[in-house]
Image 1 (cartoon, rainbow, N blue to C red):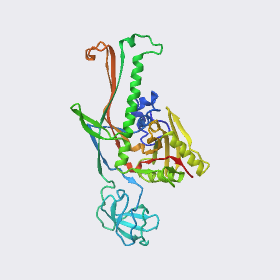
Image 2: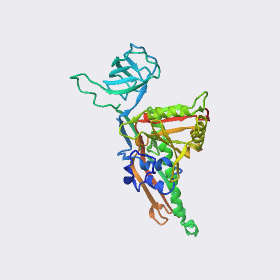
Image 3: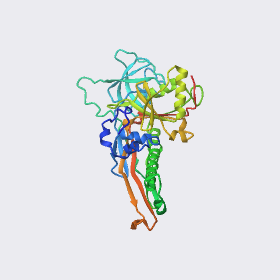
Image 4: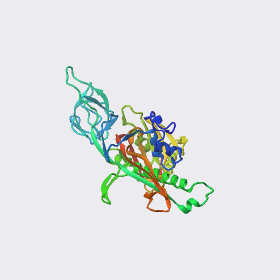
Amino acid sequence: MSVRGIFASHNSIVGERVGDLASRVLMLGYAGTAPLLALSSGMPKEPAGDTSFSWVEDSHISGNTTATGAQTNVATSLNFGDTNIWTPNTVIMNQTTGEYMLVTAVNSATNITAIRGIGGTTATAIGNLDVFQSIGTAFEEGGGKPSPVTQKGESRVNYVQIFKNGWAVTGTAKAVKYLTGSQLAYNRQMALGYHVEDLERAFMFGRPGLMTLNNKQFRLSGGIVYQIENYGGTITSAAVGGAGNMNLDGIIAFLRGIFDRNVKGLPNERIAFCGSAVVERINKMCRLGSQYQIALGESAWGIKVYKIIGINGDLSLATHPLFVENSIWKNELHVYHPGLIKKRVLRDTWEESFSSTSSNNQGNDSDEGFIAMETGFQVQSVETMGIMRNILAAVA
């Protein structure tokens, strides 16, 4: 039940996920208010197994990285923004100077030791933000075994969160003959709408927490934005000739930096969310920079998706209602990798009902019930994702 033409990642999930909450969101028309949850019918989900869950950041992230600070032509201890994509015996190239060098040790997430000027190239001073590209691995004859992994192997932890939304209808309301049908059915449908909206908000903007409420454990799950902010995603603000200004070149540079990092085995695709104001400003940037305008690429199940094709991959740009109601979010552009986001479910969606005549309704003259889910959110390899903030004006 994934939306046609949006995700290539995990497209086999469609047949496995029919009937779950995400596909119900699509079928019942809530995609317009909870597009990420709706689109998650095309994303993976896994059991949580416990109230807290963990995963190891062991994805093979391909791409390049940049030097941090100017470094001399004789320096062998070199600093970069991220060295996790390399292992010892990786040949790397400075795209600015053309110098080749051999990584002999990865000392930390930002530092390596290297042999300079190999392959007939000349050791040259490294400039701040020079881009370095992997050129594969190379070993000496009779050398030892290679490093067993090319991943950073960092552990991540998050919690499951209990979501509940209730409905009720009094005995009097049930007795009244509504021309529009059952009031109870209507209230249950409304509760589902609130439920998926709550899930959507936490999926994107939740922050993790563990505390006690009413002498019982109370948990919050960290959402996508929190994980991007805290684990190495790209965070930037619009500032072309002044704070809040952005042009098409700046947008393309931001997207290029994200698309330059991808996980081995996954399509290099992204889904971006923003408000209508940012779409309008990006369209204006396109008009100022050229005659090209962003075209509507897909409109299904209440989700309007615009396509930006090019750079190193394809970007699906979807407007999101949460980015309209908030004065800060409305000026932001969020770029996520759909193949690296999943729900970790401890208890899947369930419903409970209490009729006015049942003993567990404590004598209330009403039919009541709730819909609930206990789930958390996992985001892997956030280096492939990013957020641009404070996009206030389009400039040439």
